[in-house]
Image 1 (cartoon, rainbow, N blue to C red):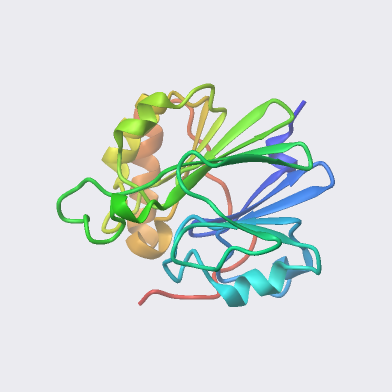
Image 2 (cartoon, rainbow, N blue to C red; image 1 turned 60 degrees about the vertical axis):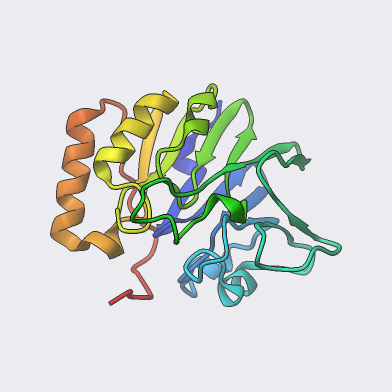
Length: 222
């Protein structure tokens, strides 16, 4: 049985690492502390090219000699050990299935941040019968209605660049995940704004899980 408490760790912002037995994945490593960098990645997933998701410095801090990378367009060149993922990409690594899904803005005020034409992505990670959806930076998009059997949905709710909390609630309802985990909001909303967003999310959805970051933030957007 997959134990999320011992397997999924929120570093902060949209950054996580995931233990799949003895195989470790990092998603959008950013602002990595010295302590967290002691954990090394077998595989790194990058959702898109913005600095707070694609950070060569932080990728390097969690990499080892044989770390593989799956990344979006507009980041790295494809070569041995580096694959470029567009929506529809899927492959197995060490028995873990990685599927790239669309991530983009539809809100008129956000269209320039994450254009659909960029083909940036979120990921569905399937391990030990558990499906984890990291949405990347996105709005509520039609493709979310095609999600199937998602156990954990990691959804942004900070607004400005992605869905806000009201949109995240609607997205969660469309996806139908067993558990919803918010991300990408604390540095945008601040302490009080984040507390209110968490409370609203919990008041509207019965299946919310707010993770505690495994490190103090090492960065600021202010």
